[in-house]
Image (cartoon, rainbow, N blue to C red; front, side):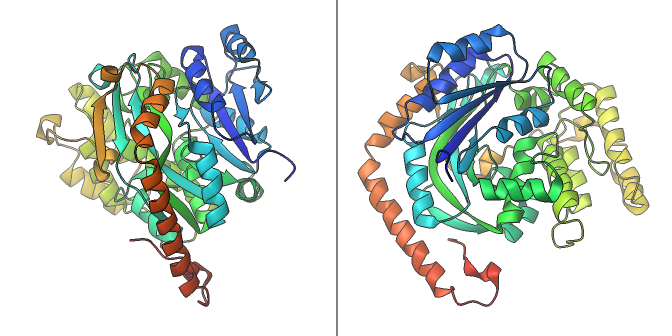
Length: 420
């Protein structure tokens, strides 16, 4: 391609305060062949003023003339990317200082069109969930794996594997060929209210297999204006969540009829899966949701607000079962009359529990933003750099040998093996 190696795409809306630090992490990369696409979702003048202040020819600024639903703004943003590989980060997230250089090396070694990685998780000091303020989770896993989509997709859809193991644009470098193929097949890149999770299911299916690396390449952060925190963990009781849902409604981007629109992460994942299934693999019975299991998970994850709120959420779940009378009867007999006080005290579905993390109070290191996170991680990881490089070379060599051993397999799917 004639464009840059990478497009780092940043959709943004009224978050100039955090966007500054996000851009700082993007502009200090030890790699030069990339562009930054800032897609301003009809923000006030502060966003344009901030971008102009960087005076960087790497930044391409795009602005919509009216507020767009999140998926529509992502659609606009990605359409402006000219890089061979596309990476999306949020306007309160950040790249790590080593990321683009190492991602480039991994792509050259592995020759894949989708490369997914682990992320750091950081809660900004102003996050609405005050108990999490300035928390930094550092993943401890390492190594490289080739994941098979047909194994990962149903596990994630049914809550048996973390959705972050999907090759989402939020934690992956995705080749323009896959993006073009998705547009060709479905008419657009994003067809669900959660564009990040949807993209993971869609690109996994199209790629068939993809590389996964444990080395963190970016920081996923939550701030006072994060859609996910507001909509899921705060049950939608915030202006951010209300705008998110109202813009989706205006754009006719709602939940799938079989998925209840309730504030739990399992419902968001299931909706993204069901939209991807309808768009790409509607007749594939091996890739489907176990609905009774899904309903149980949704009920377990519901946070007990008022009794009225509890009943409304249960009724929403019940209405999603209208196409399956037998399942609805089971729900009426076993679930509908339950009380929130019957729920376990631990109803969270925190996917981070499936990984090994070191959790630290970032304020102890003077960190108050994602650029500070990138700097402190650089110091922590620098002591392990040489060891990691040798470890990565060994992992890549082992993976290459395993791939060669099955290169003669008759089935395309058998060309790759897991690094289990």
